[in-house]
Amino acid sequence: MSAASFSLVLALAALAITVLLAWWQARRREEYWHHLLRDLQATWQKKLRQRLRFSLALERQLALLRTLATRMTLTSRLEETLEVVMEMLHGALRLDAVLIFGTNGQEDALSLIAARGLNAAERERWQQVRVEGRTITPLGKDGAGAAEDGSDVVRLAVPLVARGRTIGLLAVGIRTPRELTPEEVSLLETVADYLAMAMENSHLYQNLRRYVQQITMAQENERRRIARELHDSTLQSLIAVLHHLESFLRERRDLSMNDSRFLWSLGEQIKETIQEVRYFSHHLRPAILDDLGLLPAVDWLLTEIEREYGLTTKMVVSGEPRRFLPEAELSLFRIIQEALRNVVWHAEASEVEVSLHFNN
Image (cartoon, rainbow, N blue to C red; front, side, top):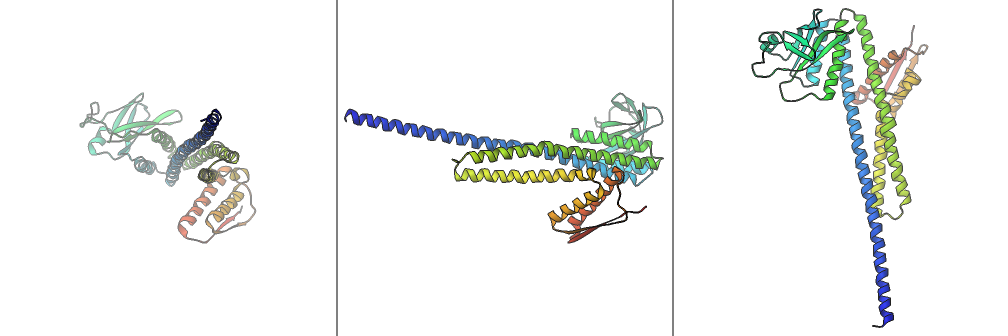
């Protein structure tokens, strides 16, 4: 082989190696961006699922508190109120026992006034208790010692405080090794606050009415906070991810057909998730109710039902429309919203009409 032929072969080999290196580097860059986008998608999906789970857990707690408050307003008798609280907690938190203690004016000496899930021996043992700081000691039969099976049914006790003084104690019992979650403890503390107010105002029915209004506003404030967090944080993050993905696809013209289809399908999934989060945020707390009032909010609600479920809707207004107190409009809106939800899910209707009549 001549020197010229040998040089040509070396040049061709060098060119081939350069081409292979360039192709390999391009492939590595493509794989890097592909994996980066997949990891980014997984991270945001995980964050979204966590936020949605948290929001749904709060929504379930709000539903429980709303049901509890509603049932408590149906009675003015303290005994019935205590039964409602024990029934709701016993079922909602999977408790084995619920105990409610009251005081006769001495904050460190409490007597059992209502209980569910206790046997005869336990009821006698916990008939009276002494409160010392965060510790409660049973004063009933054999109260100073340990229980016969070596354990006590009471797992957690929350004081009932009204107007700065302790008027009772809400205790829960669990016989299994299960521990209460922080969310359950928080719910118990909230229920304890409600129960303390109910016990303090059991002889005044009008005070209970004001109490329900406070509960409703607290629930709606929490709804507003969750809706704002979904809109300002979760939704904006998803939109930013979608914009980055679309920019990447517009700039990268060298992607394979399969990769492009995958990334475009990923973008469509993100768009669907954005719509779901936006829908969830709007329905948690519609801003139109605060801004424009009851009538525009009901009209918006009917429009949403018509658009999403295909029902023919109609709103009839008679009398002279006017604004009411925010808590009154809020209560009316939630009543109408729940009624329309029942129509959508249970009535198998094709038409729905909401009639509002204003009088003096």
